[in-house]
Structures are given as C-alpha cells and as structure tokens.
Image (cartoon, rainbow, N blue to C red; front, side, top):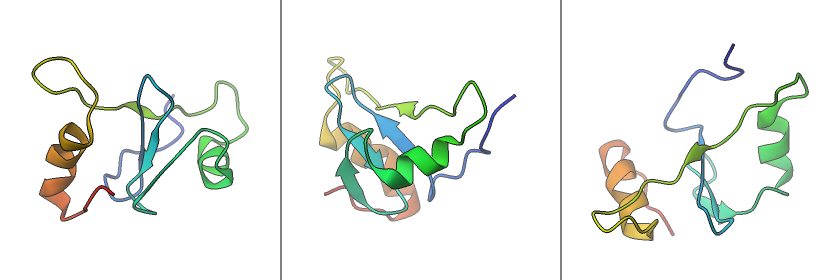
Length: 77
C-alpha cells in the first residue's frame, strides 16, 4: 500500500547519481535530507522517491526534470 498519495507539489524524485529533487522545497539534495526521511515514514517498506525522468537519450538531466515541473509552475534549480 502506498505511503503517500502522489502530489506533484509535495514529491521527491531520485536520479541514479544520487540527486534528489524536492518539488515542495524546490531544491536538489540527497537521501540524507531530514525532510525526505520524514516523508518516507517509518512503516516498512518506507516510501521511495519517484525515478528522476529521463530525456530522449536516457539521461537524467535538469531539463528532463524541468519538463515535468513546467506543468506545475515549479522551477528546478
């Protein structure tokens, strides 16, 4: 059962290289971020970030993340 209902303005995306984007905080951080840990919850299994989007070449770029956030008026740093 999912821990969190998907809300694009309060969500997390994780890239293969460890970058973690928070749409709520509009920041790029990592999995040690206390807000991310709190969002994950304590019930097992914990909630996991969504996979960072990929561009047409398969790269997880800031531009590919921005393409998702454009719909919500959020700017990726």
